[in-house]
Amino acid sequence: MKLSITLLAAFLTLAPALRAQDGVDVGKEAIKNGNFLKAIDDLRDAAKKDKKNAQAFYWLGMAFFKAESLDQAGAALVQARDLDEKNALIYELMGDVYASQKLSAAAIQQFKRASELDSTNVPLLMKLGDASKKARMYTEAATAYTQIVKLDTVNEKALTELASLYTRGKQWANAARVLGMLAKMKPTDLTTQMSYFKALEEIKEYALIIEVGEHILTLNKDSQDVKEALAGAYKRRNEPGDLKKAADLFGTVNADSLDRDKLKAYAIALKSQDDYVKATDIMERAYRKDTSACDVPYDLGTFYMKLKKWREAIAMFEKKIACDTTTGFQFASHLNAGMSLMQIKEFKAALAHIQGAIDRRPDNIQAWLTLAQDYAQLSEDTKKVDAYQKVLDLIAADTANATTNVHDGHKAEAYRMIGVQYLLDKKYAKAVEVLKKALEFAPKDCQVLLWIAQSNQNSNNKEEAKKYYCKVLKTCPNTPQAKDAQKGLEVLGLKCED
Image (cartoon, rainbow, N blue to C red; front, top):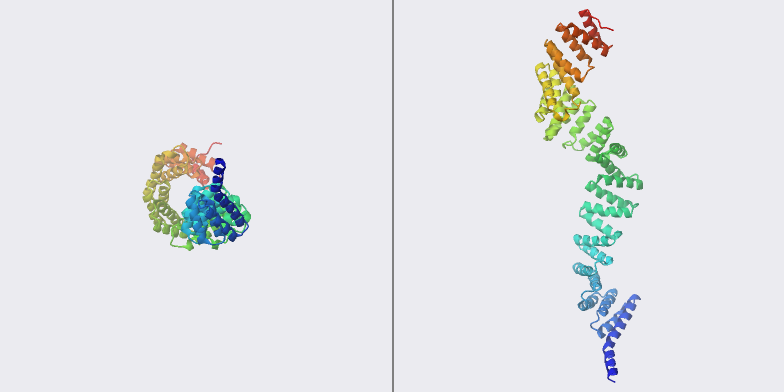
């Protein structure tokens, strides 16, 4: 009898909770069927029967939420949370309620707490990301979307939102990384491919710009922006064949639409194809975009030199000298201006520029060689010889090229010009000595052979004179030097052996 009473007491104690749970199940079914008012009645009754039933309060909050009774939903969920503080579903639904009430900060707080309790719930993380983005809490939004991508690497919405945030914040490296993932997922979506392409442009990833740009042109062969950027990337990468690709691609767009940088790139690409006429036209367009800018004049000057437009070249080099104080450009501009002035026979004006180049690079062999040539034109014989000797001294000091023939042409010219000056000064033995050194580097130089013969003849060394006159006839038949050699032999009364 005592056992029966005990069982009855236990049943009576559990009965309200069991009835409450029945009410929860009935309420959930009503929500499922869209009968929210019935669900509210059933769940409210269940909550009264068992005031410690967190599920009853949670589902009551859900019913109120579905019925758009947001204040009542919030009140029910607060009670549910107090009964079950580690239930992520309760916090998530509270976040939904606050979001519907446009209480963004409160909604984000609840979603964040829910995500701490359920860190792998992708839909929940999406709510946190979207709410944070809407509240302009972009760092928090990015964190949520990033967590989603870690859980689901092909979640298109999270990737799209994340790319948008990085693009908005001009975090181009991050934007490119995320857009690259999207681009692989959507290879034929032109909008995605273009967004990826533009992000790559910002971070100057030229290899990827080329890869993606070439792919975009298979989707839309008429995309002018892509053609321009792709051509520029070819020029920047500059692998074999790239400059031709750049020139060809630039040639398919309207040059008037190109900005200064792309016009310059186009001109350089044309230069690589030796199309200096077209390259000059394009570089002039770049120059006209901003005549005060200092980056175009030097290149344009070198183009003018190729076209033998010497005065135009001089004007560009002098402009570069005036606007760019860097040693390298000062040196090169002075030297090129000097050489251009020599071409129009303005040797005195050339001298000032050449000396300006040497002032900036006193050990430059080409500058001293040009100075010697200019002195020759000015009939400054002593200075000419000194300059050529300086060339030889600098070459001797160039230990890096001591075992190469890189300076052979310079040596031949220097010895040749010093030697002929000794000949003119009637220093015949010295002339022969120096001119023979010139032959070491230019053994078939007909004029040097003739000068050696004449120097020997003038010093009455007939056999050596005959030897070199005969070398002229053998090495250089049917030349003016051969005619002079024959006359020299006739004066000596000698003939060459067969």
